Image (cartoon, rainbow, N blue to C red; front, side, top):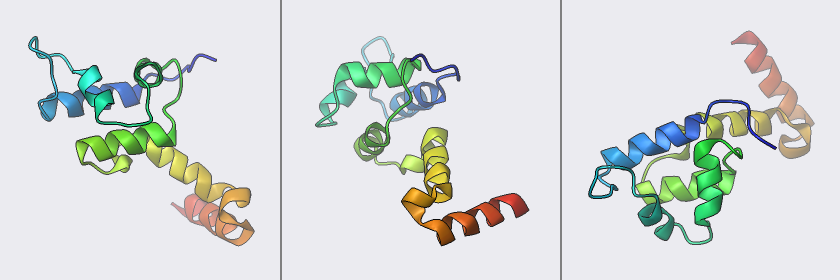
Length: 107
């Protein structure tokens, strides 16, 4: 299924790679060098998340963050994932989820 939202993850990741000097000789992001720093993540999975063909998984966002020494919350997609989890009674428990909902409604 194609993601309909713009690939914010890819844009932010591109910016982080360039800012961290993980670039090719031409100054473009060196995706291959990044993947080599992320055991358990394939180049193809990362590529699909970057271009928006697939939403970035929590695993990919955590591995990227670890490789670049940044918090995963630098990605809006990660923050949304955390919010969804906090509001999901199956993940957070009924009381925690309803409390999170109340906080969200009053924000």
